[in-house]
Image (cartoon, rainbow, N blue to C red; front, side, top):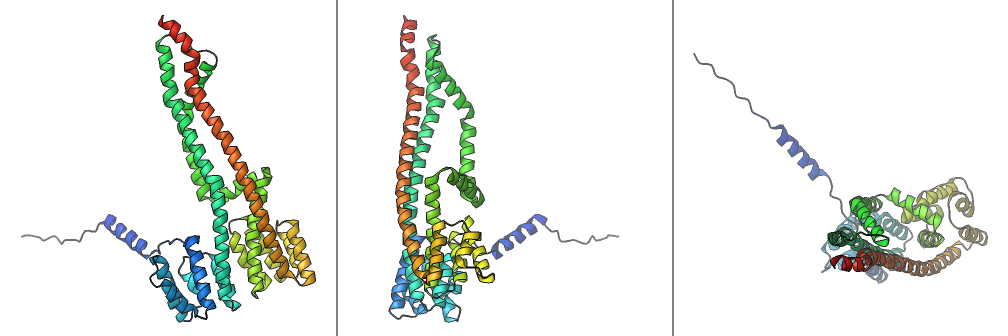
Length: 379
């Protein structure tokens, strides 16, 4: 008599887990990058010109996207056009693409609410162009010097790890005993060989941490600003120019002050001004304190800002005072940027000379000093 054993369907837990992870990955929305500022300058200029020519917003998106080389931008504009035709607000249509930051969306919303969308696009184009110019100056003043210093630092490490030990072996081979500066040079080489991997790894780790962590950047920036007055003036001028010009743009287009301040806070997100501005807006709107008092108590803006805001409130010329402050800080920013670039260039020159001297002294000085001894040992 035979008995049959029922077969059971085997399950593979690993395969099931893999399939579940794949489904979760597919369901998770892909992270998309925002369009770069150079592309946006041309976009907003084009949209502004078409809206001024009485072309409606949806058609302006269609015309600009036609035969556009940037296919991602063209797809985003067509998506915005479809959403606008469905009755979605234009700023919300821009937000749904996930390709524009909150500052841009806030300015578009302000322009739309005030019936001045063409002016908002035009102002965005000018503002982004100005930001690109300042970013170019900052990169020229900081990135290039950093690259030069890294290259020279690498040359110094190579000379100490590869070249100087060969010189030391050559001298020991002829029985010459190092002394004075030569002995110090060899000790520096030994120390460099022992610590350079840790130093390089620490340097890379610090650079990655600073690049990825806003909190760490703010801490370092705050410390350096507290010690270096020029950098403090430069950074404060840039930040205050950014949000003051935004407030001026919004308020001049009919947006109330509290909302203008909250939207402008997005332009300095990630800095101490962000929370300060939002607090000042809440106090101004809910507590009834004058704008100048709210800024003086709850923000760290310059005294000049609160003084001019107080004048604007008393004389009913707030828009004019905001415009004057924007122009003043733009002029100050240019001056501070030129001084900063010149200072950085001088510091880089000093560091470059020091590193070149270190390479020369560490590599060739032992040979020069030990030359006579080597010749005597060879006799």
